[in-house]
Structure formats: C-alpha cells, structure tokens
Picture 1 (tube, rainbow, N blue to C red):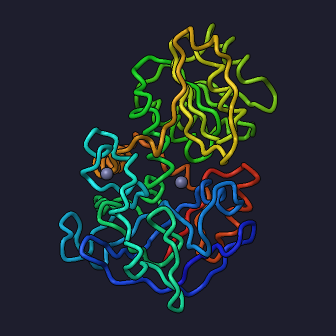
Picture 2 (cartoon, rainbow, N blue to C red; picture 1 turned 180 degrees about the vertical axis):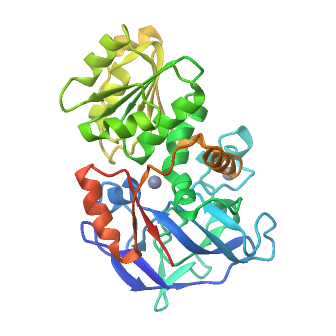
Picture 3 (cartoon, rainbow, N blue to C red; picture 1 turned 90 degrees about the vertical axis):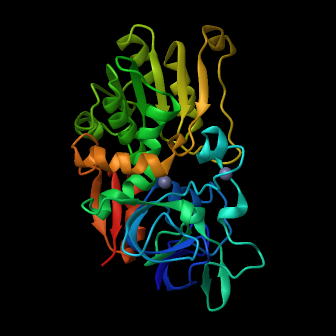
Length: 360
Ligand code: ZN
Ligand code: ZN
C-alpha cells in the first residue's frame, strides 16, 4: 500500500510502498478514507518532538473496517470508524479512574518479539502514535477506534479523531466550563477553533478568540467566539484583562509555545484555570509569577481533551449532524496523499484551518 513516510527530520515526506500485516486477535484492519493533517505531525517533521524513523506519520483519521481479529467484538467489517491515538488497555490505574486518555500500557502495541504491524521490504517500521494514518490502510488495536453512524462524512469524521476531540474535550472534559463563564482561546488552528466551538456548546457567556492572523476573526465568530483579539496588533493579556475587568475563568493555549502558555496564565481571573493544550517543544520551560497562585489560579495540561473517545466521539458525530458542532468550515482543503507536503507548507503560513487527505 502507499504511505507518506518521514525518513529524516526536516525533509519532506516521501510517498512509498509499505506492507501491513493481518490483524492479530485484538486488532482491526481499516481502509483509510480520510486523514487530517494536524499540527502535531509538523512538530515531528521539524524534530521538536522525537520519533524513531523512518515512520508513516498521520494520526487523525476515519475509514472502513476491512477485517478484525478473532477476539474483536466492538467493531466488524463494513463498520465506519474514527481512530484515536489514545489507545487504552481498559484495566490499568488510569483506565479504571476515569483518565483513560492517560493510559500508556504497552498492551495496545505489538511486543518486540512479534512481527511489526507495518514493514517495508521485510524491515519493521515503528507505528506513529498507535495509528500511522497517512496510508491507504491502518492496522490498529481494537481500543484505538470506535464505530460511528454511516451517514457521517469521512473527511469531517477524521477531524474528530484528534483536533476536534482535543479542543472540545479541553473545554468540556478537562476544564469543565459551566454556562455563563468567560473563556479565552489562544491560537485558532483546528484545535483552537474546536475549543471555541466547545465553549459555545458548553454555554460559555463570553468567548474571546486570540490569534496572530487578523484573517481568523470571521472564522472565530462562525465557531462561536464573541470577541476577537489580533495578538500581532495588541498585547493579548492586557486586552483580555481590560475587556473582562479582571480576567477569564478558563483559558486554553492551543499553540504550543511557552510565551502563549504564560499569556494564558496571565489573563486568568482569581480562581481561574489555564489549560495547556498545545505541544510545547521538548526541553522548553515556562516562567510564571508565584504570587498569582495566591489568587487560587491554576495551570494544567489537557492531553487529547481528557477523552473517553468510545463514548465522546459518537456524541461529537451526533452534535455535528444536529448542527451544533461546526466542522464544515474547518476543512479548508481536500487533497490527495501525494499533496501532503503542500499541506504542511501551507500550515506554516498560519492561514488555513485544516487540510484533509481524502483517499479514493
Ligand atoms: Zn493531532
Ligand atoms: Zn490502561
């Protein structure tokens, strides 16, 4: 099958032939129908986060089940599924205490002495984030996908698999925004727009969207923002503190920079919570004023929206079908697998929301 392979940090992905194994007892073979191009993939291409190479990237996808292992009961061939990188074992400390998105059990991966899921001319290739979605097929653990209703379009379903779950989940599940509360979202890529949308669904009173690009203003409002601040033109912390007369109850950093994490904390009201949703590069630290904690302010990480994806993703699909979750405006371009490098080049300009690879 064809796949987009990262061979070397800083180099474009290459479209190559790779081989995929048959499903083991708890595995599912999926025909990929759509794969979103997520900012996190770029972090690995640029080497800000390390991964063994060569590897097939991609981790935000939807497709059709082709075959399942003998023990798989939750999905069957023909089912439409969304994948999730938060593969969970179901019985570790995290899984049993309502924090399954933190599960790191090796059980959902193949053991070192087993044949690899993906190979190339006999050589094992490491699977990227349990998925490797930039490929015509995916072989995943049964706890890395969930069946969804068949009237859901694949290109929009794919987005739920990472960016939308991460953004909506940060608001609703991690920070638990209540109706009427005030929210700020920094960075309006796919994740940030989803956080804005999640805040609107949660009933937040005021939703302040912040981005460096002034062209994101209309998009932010379409997703439910009540206010927009262009961070290239005004200091976002000062502006938010003035606009809200003292700060917001929840802030969401959806960029992955230490500076914007510090800003997210700096714009909190007393008792407010800052959520770090973006991926800060390995080795970087942030600096926070110690006295701010005396006002009961908090800062916390939000991993993949604290998802319980087998429950949450079908609900997000229903929200989209009911017109509450905005996904149509998030897909800025539909491309072929061979055009994946163009999508990363465009992403670096900060203009587009999301490119989605569509497979025939
Ligand atoms: Zn992602
Ligand atoms: Zn677990």
